[in-house]
Image (cartoon, rainbow, N blue to C red; front, side, top):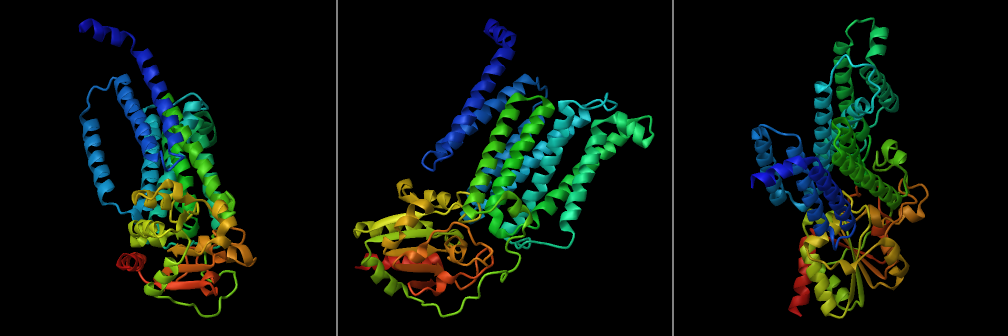
Length: 483
């Protein structure tokens, strides 16, 4: 036994390298599986396994003498994670994702901070990759942390969800970037600090300017997300997710951990790709999302809608559905609020038993985070084969007997297609207004997260089924079961 232990100790570096390679492979495979709802759970498990191996091997490689605080941290984090997984409702999932992004950012900041604290301070001119990585991990981590907190507050209503704009805002943000850039240069170049500030010991000034970078990065995160409206939250969440990955990658360079560099790069790259997908789904650019203040006013642009809506009762809606040959469900955030996904699946099964063709049209930015509706329907065990994207369902929409819009608003707004003065003009939508009959399930006539009117509600083929979506669909289910 002793000889085996000695052999393992002798080849420790090789074992660590092999374990890191295995972990990296598991990350890539897990990420690939996460790209499909059918394999997402397996992908999550594979990625978690890779991270577990990475953490264990890293702790072994660093010759940790006292595991007391590590164990305490694992226990506290495990309890919080288990509690959150049981208590957090599906409607709160976007907020939780935003918080997780923020925690990832602050973790990278603390890693960079510790690397700076442990480094010698009258460094030769710090132009090394490590020094730059320390600044980047702190900068990106700080922006990610406070930006994610603001996103969390906007999503749950604790912070004003509309864009917060004021004159000179972009100039202030630019000045903050200049302050960060100058401070970062002075931190990384003690020789320049001594020359400019006429000091003999640059270490004190390095500390001061480092803390300036930390503080201003926090402020910049707030200033960057406050001008963004709730309608853009899916894009913001995916972008902050990318930031958290980039911060982790920079932290990996700061502490010279190859696997952290790989993991951070994977998260950062996948986040950027997802952000690009979200922007295409909204027909917007990243700069437009970050600086346009979309949704700043509920009447900004667009034509004022006039006319009367046509309400319908569940009993009458049942008669239409009972005779339908094809039904398409279009879920939105309202379905998450009402927790109606299970009764939606039940109604869909009853329609199928009645000989109806049933599909679920999912818009990429429906809900408050990327994949929000997919997660809800997966929780309700809706078959992945029934989920379709807008580009697949739109060409056949004119043949659909009934479209049931459940709490969706902006992603089905015809103004995006027809009204050039609308703030969302050009955004790809699910063209439910072309169906033979449209049922819109809403509590009232309030605008969506973009804050604009929806002409769909006034179309002659639209019927408004007012009330809680879960209660309305449950009434339809009862009608089917009673016949």
